Length: 312
Image (cartoon, rainbow, N blue to C red):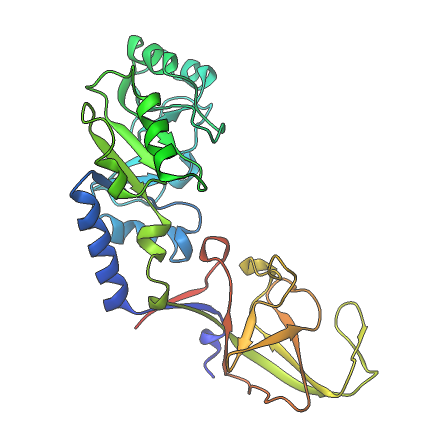
């Protein structure tokens, strides 16, 4: 195999994935303004590459922190979702989550969005914070509400409606984690923008395939010691080394199982992943992969550092 191919790879069915993204954007546009989110590891695609794609759909992008502003397309206005205690950032829109964030921007003409406290109780305060921002010299572009993932539809509608009840109608409302179909049930006194990340980029899982290369295979016998921890091999079989480890964010699944599969069968880890390699074990009666084969990798893309994105 070509040494440059020895990576954790995300293979994307370009036509199918692009069609899903376009459908999602168009569906949201019927009820609200869609705002793509490009943050962290770029949802597995890489932040800079995904931002370039997202810029084709929107002139506004949401990023995670002020440290993610570098390398964005010049055509977009970035909105920083995580509040910051640093000073003004003229090229971006910042988020205010409490009075300290407001104070840090005092005296500037910074463009801001004010977070309203939802039942998440993470960032945000009640509506008086928005009024303080409006009375300051800041340019308030909206208020933001970040809803929890587990909440009944009726509760979502009721919570948003209550939070914006005394927000001036001229102030747009930025929403996260609410189905577009519910926006028609919200007060028509305000305009709405919907931030979309996972639903947009990962909504069609069949268009995405995460895998890693087999770098070495060796036979071992019962009782033999191997690995960093010199663990004992339980039975005759094969040690399979794959090019994925903790440097890629690879860990056992939350229930302790291996995230690796070959021929649709789970392959057990001989020991926990290390930096760029995980040692796997297959018994001698199982079909062993060859060097250069690829194993499927079961991982959340938002938690995985992908070496190579392959558009097919």
